Every structure is written in structure tokens, then in C-alpha cells.
View (cartoon, rainbow, N blue to C red):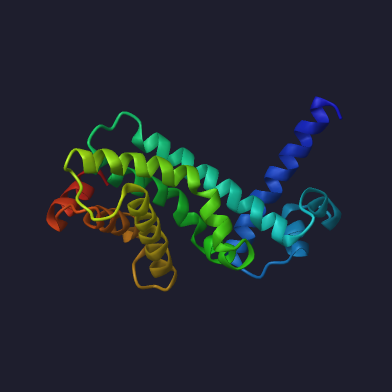
Length: 201
């Protein structure tokens, strides 16, 4: 396969994934046929890249996890205060994950939560290192070890996503709500957490 052919195949795969995400966010039951029509290709082309709907969903979740990891890494770059780092990481990841909130709900059915946890392991470990620094410096206080606290932070994130899905929290407030809740879970006083998030968010 030539480089040009490979490049075209990669572009087709990317386009199918982008269209699939849009279709699934619009209609969680969108079929492979619907996705193919929306992408302007025949069904065989979609199946050539993704042998099943589950394979397509897995690829979309992989892509989301990689994007989340990149967003968190960028948010943490050059930030020395652990509290600010935690807030910035939550806000940055929310900007990415808000668009995936319905996809994440779908993924819980088709990819399994274990698969999602595994895909988010690099994000979780980077977060745990940040939380360890905050605990060491006395910025955070928690009876939990840092990796366990990273799990709590992750579940706060998913919980707020679900609350947005259910109409309990306005989408525009989701990121700030998640950041403040994560900070308070790490032992930062609520008033201080709210002021910090307001300042940077």
C-alpha cells in the first residue's frame, strides 16, 4: 500500500469517526447504515475500517481518552500550585468531555466500564502525581492515598456528566461545578475552591 493510499484510508477512517460521533450524539441508536450515509460512503467502507458497531464505539472511546489525556497534560504544563493544577485539569478536560457526554453513556453499555477505566489509566496516574504533590505540600487533605483520590476525582467527573445528561446541572456550569467539587473532595475549603475556579474558569 502506497503512502498516498494509506493517507487516504486514514483520512476516510477519521471522517467516519467524526461523522459517527456526531450521529451518535444526535441519535444514540444510529446504525452503521445511517453512519455510512451521513459520511457519504457505502456501508462496506465503514465495515472495512470497523468490523462491528462495537469496534467503532471502542475506537471513538479510545480517541476520546487520548484527547482527554492531551487536554489534561496541556492544562498542567507550567502550573506549580496543586490546587490550581487540579482546577485547570478539570476545566480543560470538561471542555473535551462535554461533547462526549452522550457517547460516554453509550460506551458504558458497549465498551464496559472496565474498558473505560483501562483507557483512562494514563490520565489517572498523572492526576495521582499531582494529588500526591498537593498532599505532600499540605494543600490537600484526605484520608485516601493519591491514586484512590484520583479515582474519586474521576467519579466526580462522570457523576457531573451524568447530572448534566439528566438535566440536573446546566451544561454551561458543569465544568466549574466539577472543578469545585473535586477541590473540596481534596480538602480545599468550599469558599476557597469556588473563588479559585471563578478566577481561572
